[in-house]
Image (tube, rainbow, N blue to C red; front, side):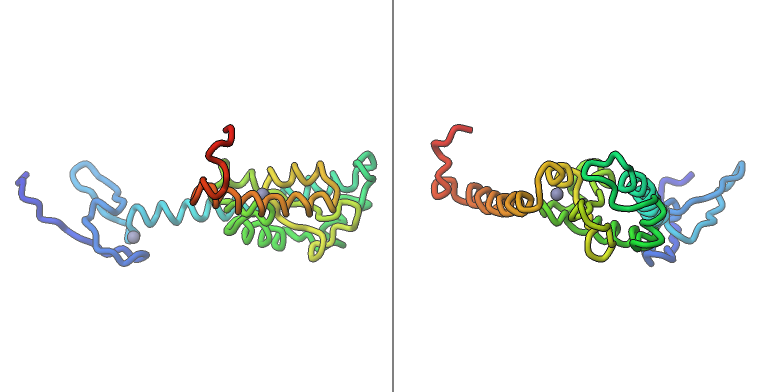
Length: 196
Ligand SMILES: [Zn+2]
Ligand SMILES: [Zn+2]
């Protein structure tokens, strides 16, 4: 084989990039490689990852509805059940898989409304995304009493009552300001002599 590379190129139908043939999947026979794909390898992979991620959120939505239905109708639930039967979440309170999926997806692309951390920056991504019943003593209407929250905030919230949760969020905001100031100007923030 000649060491001079005569590149053969093909254009990817997804990203429109013009790439050497090696960037496309081929079916190889004994002597030749037949380049069958018109979508480049990395575009293919990206598409596959995306589809996988999308399906994962839907699967999560379905399992959250199932789990919460059981939990919220449980007679032994702390504070008592707030629905009669698991299926009520779907038939009465608006928790369709489509809607819960949209709620989760929208949250997942942004940040936790409690700690303002982007979900994309949290470890083990999807498992950090939970659904919270805002007021655990009231009916779980999807429009007014359900919100996505990160797992850490959800855990903290469960240990606090309504007013305390409000205070806690206020504390989180103040803490962020303090930390930002500390990084920018430790002297002004008064932390130079503070014990770490
Ligand atoms: Zn491509
Ligand atoms: Zn959070």
